[in-house]
Amino acid sequence: SAAGAAGSCLVSVPQEVIKQRLVTGVYGSFREAVSMIWKAEGLGGFYSAWKPTMSRNVPFVVTTFTSRDVLKGKIQKYKEKRDPERGSAVLTPVENIGIGIVSALMAGVLTQPIDVVKTRMMTQAASTAMPYTSALDC
Image 1: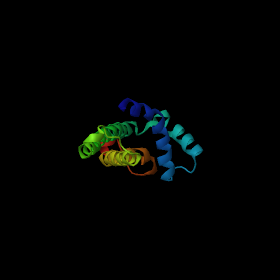
Image 2 (image 1 turned 30 degrees about the vertical axis):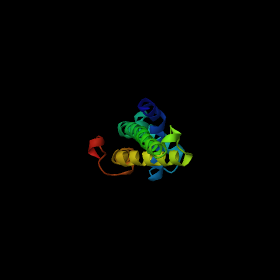
Image 3 (image 1 turned 90 degrees about the vertical axis):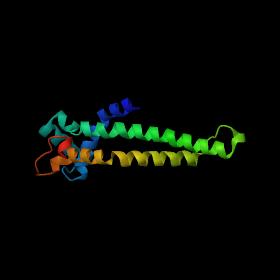
Image 4 (image 1 turned 180 degrees about the horizontal axis):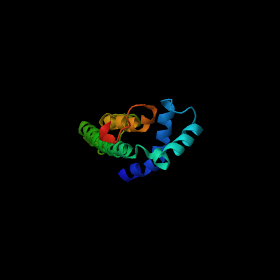
């Protein structure tokens, strides 16, 4: 649900900030990253990309589950039309996996621009350029 996606950000955003800064070489170790973010930016540093992350996660979850339901319904209708004597069409594991992959792909394509903004906000500490003032600035 959208509320679950929002709530998960309490834990995932700090972890993502640390990961992005380690990957970009800002810090050499997890311990150094936590220590330096805390000293330089305080608690807020761990949530430097809270808004862009929320702006990505909530639409990602909504799009994934909505598109999954639509695709599932269309495939079930097709199967029922093809074999009306069987009644309710049950999806196979392969069909369910395929639907999940397509749904996540659709959500990823939709939210990719927001993900770029989120990553830029999280890694701006690695740059000597002027820091972004907001997500609109990215």
